[in-house]
Length: 239
View (tube, rainbow, N blue to C red):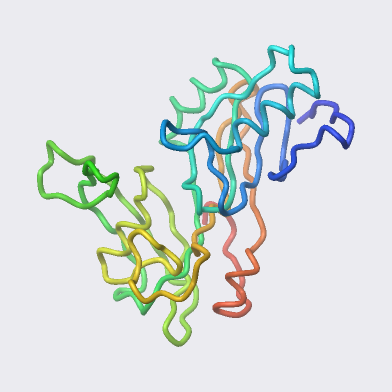
């Protein structure tokens, strides 16, 4: 695929890593601690504001902008796709069920069985906490497929195939199984000594909104993960 000409180094985005860019989309790796976009409660610097500045190439009068296709939680690192037009955003969101999303996470304890799918209806209360409910009218059906890649003393490294994309889905599903994500201050263990959330969006495959090609992007393994469980090999995206 032909990529657009990159702007001068001084206009490269500060705070995110561009993995791929063309005239229709931009794919970046988001660090832990950065919001995807602002909220009514939080107006801090975000991926959205950083990339709007980036594609305007230093010209505040430019009408260029990026469009949010999907989000990652503030403390989740990994791959994000953004569109450069409303049409590209609508296409990507309309084909989201065909998008293959793979995450890495480290949880407390060992899951039994080691591979499986967690299903529940997820709802959110007035305190912005997500939980499973038996009331199918209150919650949205959610599916989280997991595979144990490595077990160490006290921890399990999992690959997550996200079959639906609800807010806090992975964190809630694993916590409710008794195996919260390491470093999860909202749904995790009260005595968790880690402050970094061990959840990383490591690979994504999707159809390009204009040329129709299937694209796959991967990221490396965060240092925090190898510090917790040592070295490990990753399966190829989509396997």
